[in-house]
Image 1 (tube, rainbow, N blue to C red):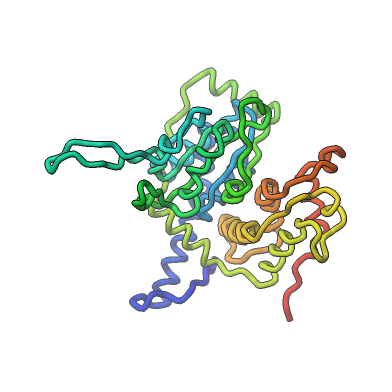
Image 2 (cartoon, rainbow, N blue to C red; image 1 turned 90 degrees about the vertical axis):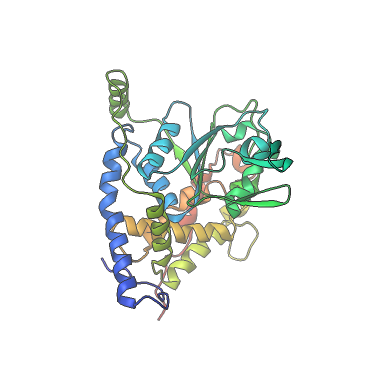
Length: 348
């Protein structure tokens, strides 16, 4: 495959920069099969879920994973962290969890120069954070992740503490238990690149899961890449070229979800109280670049954008009471948006 590059650094020749990008792309493409093989040791099925989480990882975005208990959400995230040799931390969100339990706190310690306040880092100082059942903790504690997710830093007592790169947050939430839960604020939801829905397996896959987990211990996951590899993949994804008409298509797809705007479809005005913002279009394009790379292409197609419309938009479109009364789901709105949005036409 041919991977165009942006202008190289002054000390690098264009040929050298091209060779580095081509080598990185080939490692990623060839590594996809190996990643799937390693995950198959512990995870059965869920191919679409795995692909979406992989795309978010390659694009440097965070994921919200929605699914019923017992679907191996935690196991999947931990296994991906092992494959990429990333420092993994699981934070169990509970009603009594405090912000300092996530970011860290200052304590008074005796030192050679006397007593002084020392910052003790919290579990957020890792490469991959699993925020388990994030909707079980109050918004004040949920907000403790906002700065870390957006700025990749933590501020304590006016001091800025930079998080180690790469840094990803994968949060899980249970859609069926509403008692004792706190819906995530829209500002925090918008920080998640994808809302990945993890559903029950088909019967044959579920039989395989039960057979495997009741007969032997799972095989050890092999580390295939490193954190430095992930950073290289993140940079490579951003250098994948995308045509203007594809960017415009992503922007229109997001903008048509906003009610009471010029050109908004009638079904959006009828069912939607709040639509997707600019960050949705950004994530559609960025995710489409990563998806194209995984498939061995160095260009983005409309299919790439369409395939990611649901995970990007489902947590950014807020339905009104009329939609709920009529039994309309966000997925229904996204499908109609894909039909209503004109396909991209190459500029002459």
